[in-house]
Image (cartoon, rainbow, N blue to C red; front, side, top):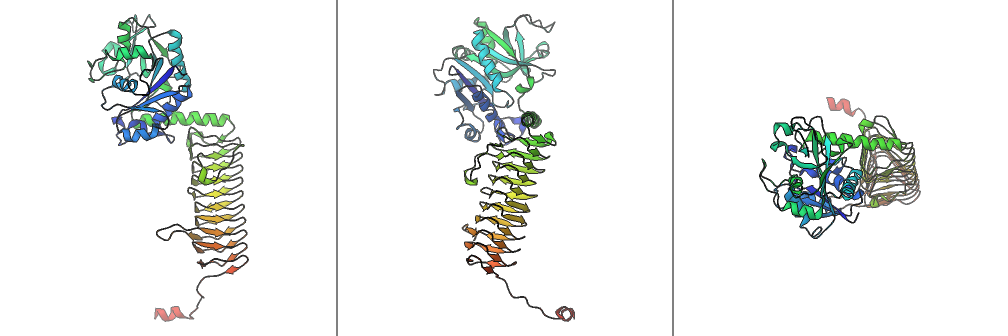
Length: 483
């Protein structure tokens, strides 16, 4: 769609959210509102997308500047002024064709509807097409006044849209109209530029309303029509915390329904939250209170990457996930059990297990059949094939071989207060409980380390290492002490 551009309005403050963050920066399932809209526009095949930023622009720009072009609205003078700022930006200066106007706080809009809006303008030859919706309770929305509208009868005889009346400017009769403005439009670029020059501020807000463009175009005899949405839900905006929660609920169930249709079992889908890019293989079972966020790809064709190269989250075929698990940008191979685990940028290869109550920090990599057990924390470490860290341990900055067993309460002491240091543990080594491995240190293959040891020196292959004080017993010491 080279002859179509999109403008995403993302300059508003969103005062009803009562937040230091701009409205469009608030997130649904780990993704800011504005990014849902930008992605929907790109999904419709629109290559030239411009986001208009304004309020707290320094927070919004990092969200969109790598995804689309941007334009700044230095003063918030209304939606028409925001569109003017975009049209005057280098990205759209001189552009001819169709311009789709999108609201950055409406994350439920679909690519199919955006494409349909652009197609409707192209096929009808109209100067403007507005996407409308019919609501049982239209309060707060602009009302669509069609040609031949009889205020007394509350009905229209024509398809042409003569004007859009904002809630604050509506008469009681106009306020009774149930067909509402969604905030999505498609204009002919030339006609839009001409209309913007004639829009004034004679309204309750004292702002330049984009909605007034419809009346301006009609006064010039140009064609202005409406495209009524089949699903008013996708047009809902986010102006409050309640609306944010409702939009999240809708997206949550849309995503979960698609995953279940693909062969994923969810014990309680209303208690599972998956980000928009999650892909899960068939025969994965997800228990309640699970959150999967990031570019998640869970499939039988998964190619596991080193944890340091992760850009997405994947969960493979036949896994059991949860309950009470949160995975962020994490890859999980086939046949894994991930129970009560929090993982960030981690890798679990096939048949690995984690939890309950495990914490896998960035760079944690459990190789095939490895285990991170109860109350275990792993950071920037490779746990070799079949190796186990069963319980109450911290492993950081470690390269661990195959078939290693780490006893309960053992720690790699990787931080000296200034720098991080590395621990290497060879294949088949047994680390006794409550062992401190003070890095930098290397422990060889097939080593046995006695429980309660503090290892500060390298240990060669096949050795026994014991580093603890000799036990001393003082007979009847308690009796004498109590005297």
